[in-house]
Image 1 (cartoon, rainbow, N blue to C red):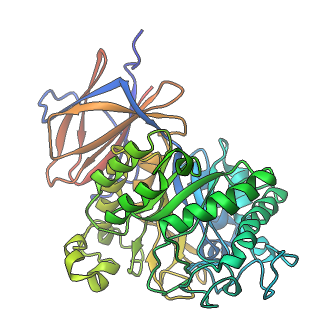
Image 2 (image 1 turned 135 degrees about the vertical axis):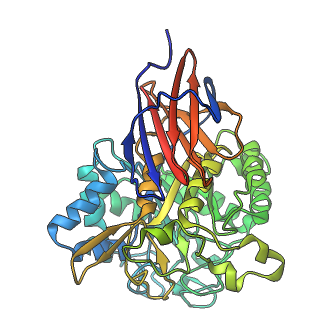
Image 3 (image 1 turned 60 degrees about the horizontal axis):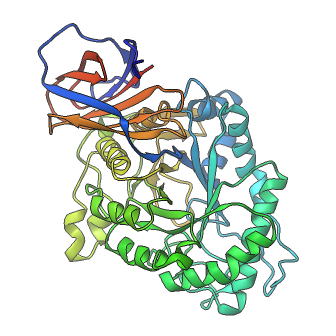
Amino acid sequence: MNTCSPDIDIFETSRRGNAFKRIKQSKSRSVQSAITILPDESFQTIAGFGGSFTEASAVLISKLSEQNRNKIIEAYFGENGSRYSLTRTHINSCDFALGNYSYAPVYGDKNLDHFSIERDLQVLFPVIKQAMGVSNDGFKIVASPWTAPPWMKDNNDWCGGKLLSEYYKSWALYFSKYLSACRSEGIDIWAITVENEPLGNNSNWESMHFTPSEMNHFVKNFLKPQLSADGHGVKILGYDQNRGPELREWVDVMYANEETASLYDGTAVHWYESTTKIFENELQYTHKAAPGKYLIQTEACIDSEVPRWRNDGWYWSEKATDWGWDWAPDDRKHLHPKYIPAFRYARDIIGCLNNYVNGWIDWNMVLDRRGGPNWAENWCTAPVIVDPDLDEVYFTPLYSVLMHFSRYIRPGAKRVGFIKNDDHIMITAAKNQDGSIAVVIFNPDKEKRMIKLTCKNNTFNFLIDKIALQTIVIS
């Protein structure tokens, strides 16, 4: 019995204006790119794709009319939308909050008698719950702290510094109370990262530093015992910063032996080390060090850029710069050239999947025309931009690019092998639990390409536009 049936659906997003548009097969036999899918050659299991619930996004959504609120939530989580399956949120405040806050504001409250998530109950949790109500399949949530309350730290500040050893137990209890509070609101957290960006961010916004050995010590002696004692089966992800040279250093310590490896369910990474490199070697190194554990891309965005309002062309133009354009050290400047935002997303997600990443999470789902709100004025771009004063919503091309992965590569899918004869295109493929196969093809070339796609005994011919992304679904 064939794995593939003769029926396929093809969806395309392109610089010329297609936005996840259904297209037809071609009768042409003039083939430029031959692709063979190998559905019996399987790799990692997919956890999901999606974006992040931040206070900034939640506040903006809450300011819109009911019609536009529903439109955005449906677009991300509904059956006719992106069907996001893996998301992230922040524990305490982050740069994309309206200000600094913690759940334990009382100085010296070691037993956390005054712990309260009241701030999140106002706007953040209601948006998460609305998304839960729309999602037929549900979605996983990864929660990450940017910092402990300042009174637990050696610099008594929101930014930078380290957790004082006398508060390790309190900080572990803090995680447990947060998870319990979420559960009491009907929100189950699938995984936590121990610390967002433990190497810091030059103290520009909330942060707290850990070394790899310090994180091991905290997880082994405080966090894991506390969560276990309180009945939390949440997954623990270590690191949670950029792919790059530092990733190997952390992996060597996290997975140094069976004891340290048992502390973690996987590794979390970000994309900000480069605007162009995937860091395939580092991802492969991480997978080989812990082949049975998760490798989750937990954050990515077009950073240090104010969104372009209703200007699709900008998202397909080589004009964007990131933090490293101005601030990277001289020996790393070459990693931060100007780039095309839509290309960066397509290349990175395909590259991550082809190098054992299980899940890929974008940063803010919604921002305003300035790239906020953001107390640190760390402006960024999101797939959906809104003007709450005018009650207007703009779905950028980035929204459609992400849909090419999230809609039809579902949790539980297995990435599968492929053979291609054309270096101009990038592809990845996955076989879903229902037997369907989703193939994503990215053509950054300035010429259309005729594709011949073979899957077992079936062959399909179709055209991919120049500068375009396609998802092909084989039932």
